[in-house]
Image (cartoon, rainbow over all chains, first blue to last red; front, side, top):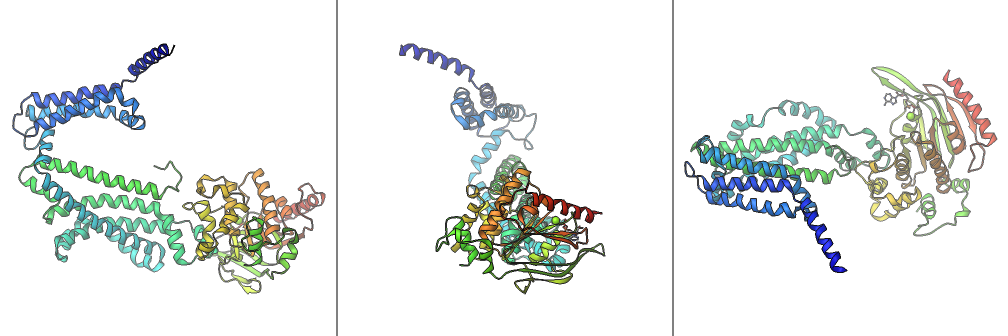
Amino acid sequence: MTDIVQTLDEQADTSAATRLVWKHGLIAAVTWAAASIVTIALPDTIKWGSVGLFSGLTGAGAAILLVLAFTVHTLGKTGKTIEHYGPWLIAVGVWFALWEFTTAKTGWLPKPFFSPPHGLLNVYVVEFDRLIVCIGYSLRLWGLGFFSGVTVGFLLGIALGWSRSFNYWGMPILKLIGPVPASAWIPATFYFFPTTFDASIFLVALSCGIPVAILTASGVSSVNKAYYDVARTLGADERFQILKVAIPASLPHVFVGLFMGLYYSFAILVVAEMLGAKFGLGWYIQFQTAYSGYANVYATIVIMAVLCSGIVKLLFVARDRLLSWQEKGLI
Amino acid sequence: MNAPLKSLLSFAGLGRKRQEPRSSRTVPADNARRNIALDIKNVSHHFDIAGSPLAVLDNVTISVKPGEFVALLGPSGCGKSTLLRLAAGLDTPSRGSLLEEGQPIDGPDPSRLLVFQDPTLFPWRTVWRNVATGLEARGLLDTESARVDNALKLVKLDKFADAYPHQLSGGMAQRVAIARALVNDPHLLLLDEPFGKLDSLTRMTLQAELTKLWQEVGFTAILVTHDVEEALLLANRVIVFSDRPARIVAEFEVDKPYPRHRDDTDLVHLRQTILGQLGIAND
Ligand SMILES: Nc1ncnc2c1ncn2[C@@H]1O[C@H](COP(=O)(O)OP(=O)(O)O)[C@@H](O)[C@H]1O
Ligand SMILES: [Mg+2]
């Protein structure tokens, strides 16, 4: 009796399993395997290095995708996320294969302006130490500039939004210099600051401080006046009204300013590093371009993309935490 | 601890120090001990609109007795909200004077609280935090946070302490606004069409709740409304204003015990009279 039930169960399981094969995963495994084979089987027209490593990685990717194709339905929520990216995974495999083929394997897209994926990988292998140092330098410069700029911009914005006289004198100045790209200040700041590092911090701070100041000020001054009336009747002094009404009420605006400032700060960071720094990702790009090390340049751009979008993501997380009181469905 | 706080606590069944027997407190007796009143003396007010004055209040004189419930009726836009803002101390009148217990009103004070037509809850604060705002602003929250819980019980929203305003219905939000005022133990509660935007069932429930709160807690209340029936159900005295600029055109004492019934023949009769007054005022 139990045996029969078991057999029936197994049959049900296998039929369910065939239905649960993840087709996109299977196709992706094929495209990744193709990329791996193209990389290892065809000879490079010019040596790039790390051929075996890239072929091995894409091959491993293909193997993992193959396993996932049959097991992804057992992984619950993570599995669902992986399945969602199925078409992307297929496209990436195709992209790798074509990229290998058109660059390293045929030379249709020639060196030095184009580089195969294993060329980029080779940069990470060979230049690992130097890139880590550059990432550290860039993050330090960006961190110092961004956080000081945002702090000053936020405080300035509150003063501008709250105090009439601050607003009277400060707002026209801010409106006048606000739209000037921070890069326009580069020559002057490099002259005024003792070191290029200080000057660069200032430029990054300026680039993000201004949008934060403007948006904070407009946020504070556009707070529904009725909130202040309520707070005043409840016995709130000015300090309470600023800290507990004006600031939380204007936080959605402040975050718009923070996002703008974030993008501006990335832009000016790279420019400032290209002009005067001794290390850093911007400096590295500049340096490698001079030696036609385009593979290194692309590899660095990939690092920047990951870093910048990671920081943007962090800011989104912070915003969702702090603004969880808002009605959902805005973004 | 003063009398209204004690009654507020004991009503919620949570008085920490001393509870008065509920039955011993009839409203007038309780309030007679508290020498409070609002005196509105010859108040006129105008706004400047594009350089020219807009007269809104015309020589309004009202004297409110301690513990009294006064309803202000009048056509929309005549100046009722303006009068309440003056009483709350949010604005100063162009002419005339307002006194609270003989003292000139020269600014907002938690002893006189205004409940706005919109609940105007702080959307970034939970229900509990909204109600706690007044105590927090005066540095009393650390020692007297139980008052917040009691006020929420009073308006039957203790289950929603951690909700955010956007998660509340209109009636619940208005009850939070009332709790946010009551937790401060105001002598004078100014209510500006507090139920105006609610559906009629919610409105009837809240009217009954407000009457009960007023009887139990014993504050003085001034209610602005455009609903004659609401005025007659709740108030000891109904004052009818003219069109803008608001002038007092009639006053009615409503000497009926609570809870009142909307079909009470005297009240129905009075309603006809007042509607007539308003009709004349609307001409
Ligand atoms: N802050 C203000 N500035 C200019 N005009 C105002 C202001 N507040 C109210 N008013 C005007 O005063 C008149 C009376 O307003 P209000 O007191 O709100 O009327 P009600 O509450 O009786 O409907 C309206 O015509 C309104 O437009
Ligand atoms: Mg009004």
